[in-house]
Amino acid sequence: MTAPGDDPLGARAPEVIAAVMPLARVLCRRYFRLRVEGLDRLPAGPALLVGNHNNGLAGPDIACTLSTLWDARGPDAPLYALAHDFAMRHVAVFGAVIARFGALAATRANARRALDAGAQVLVYPGGDLEAYRHFRRRDEVILGPRTGFVTLAQEAGVPIVPVVAQGAHRSAIVFHEGEAIARRLGLKRWARLERFPLALALPWGLAAGPWLPWLPLPFPIRLRFLAPLRVAPDDDPAEVRERVRGAMQSALDDMAGRR
Image (tube, rainbow, N blue to C red; front, side):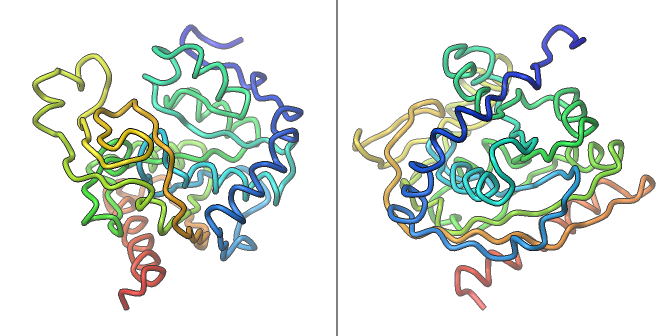
């Protein structure tokens, strides 16, 4: 039985995933010219996959990562991705659609149930702080002060697998993060968001707000899976977060040709 507010793991539909996989392959290989490294580092059992987030709803990093994992493990393999609670709960139609592809509202209870069931769970701890960062910070990993993903891995006894995407933040040009706008609108209180981005994006030209999707520009994307990181129960979550962020930033610097 699931508690009120929990998402059922059974909403994921392998047959739907299998049906869209051919299109996802074409999109990733032809449009984004996706290159993947380190997939052999992916463990076979339950794990918490931690990615860097790019361009919110329209960010191609999520589609590229899930498509890569579906290809590697098959549509029947238990794989879930944590999605922002606002998208899952307040945009009910959208939430129901992405639930078919393994989306769960980003709560610890949902993630823990999936991990305990033997699944791998993809999470983006940086959330809107990272997804809507300024274009000039496109090759920067921003996790902020958040440590919930570390304590989740500690409690579930699973490794953390960093997954680094490079190039995805060029899918639109965020020229203003909109922190002050978000404060004035009280977004943190009623939508759990701290950014209201302004971006140059197709097909709108000017795209305003965290929920407006746009057509990602066809820049090449690289994806790198890093070595799994085991977390001890008594490790300091903030220190582990910085270890994860440091490893991801080092990989992103390398992928962006900054060293």
